[in-house]
Image (cartoon, rainbow, N blue to C red; front, side):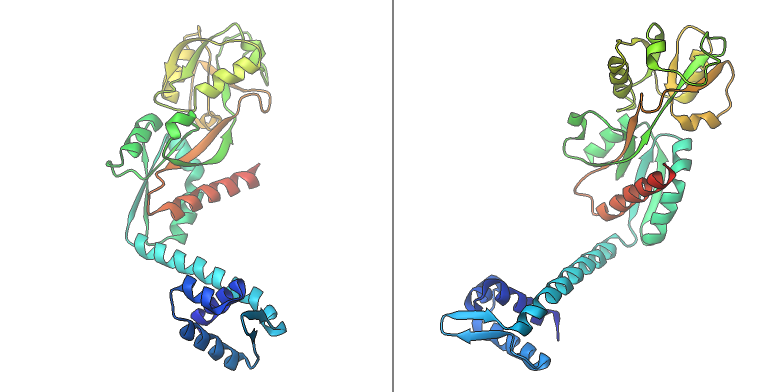
Length: 301
């Protein structure tokens, strides 16, 4: 038995017509009839009752049909995967991330994907997400995907993206701030503060969610400065006249003159996405990378 026997059988069973099945398969009717007869001889039972201008499945035909469809679906899946891996073998996949701490966080997922696709040379490079997204859209810089906050919809036009995790940033206060000894804060407690906000141009999806969270808390934040690195946040906030926020992974960094305090759960949540071009031949690797990170986050949560 060969796959073509099952393919011809499923097509005739779906159409209940040898002539229609032959047209759909672009073969002659005698050829398809011969293949079905060969299959019946191998099984030892008739699969169709053939009457003038009418074809119907026998009981044995109905039993075979579901199994034949499943076999064809699985064979198509694995054939496509084999084709993709053959095309990707020896290829390079360069993915931009936005900081060493983030790279450390996703390192186990990257290692897992490297094991699953040993023929793909997966490389992480550090780049501001805004710059990396521009390079990705241009399609001529050798960059295949970008980790970023979740940009505004118009920045995702023509690109694929998957949300891989949800980050809950922590508030950065001067060490001598009146609220510096609090174990948790709410945004409403900070409504009168001057804010340093992450640059939406350089870090899409890092500034807008903060502003929207403040609006949900009932106030418009007084934004006086923008940042594009954690060190700049710590240095500026330590001067004592503004407050800001950073990802919770920054709690492991050395700092002086500031304190990091978590917000009430769910008050400020920032999606993080993996973004790529839909015409990339490496889509399966990127899909798998996104799913491995997402699964790890679910287990961690």
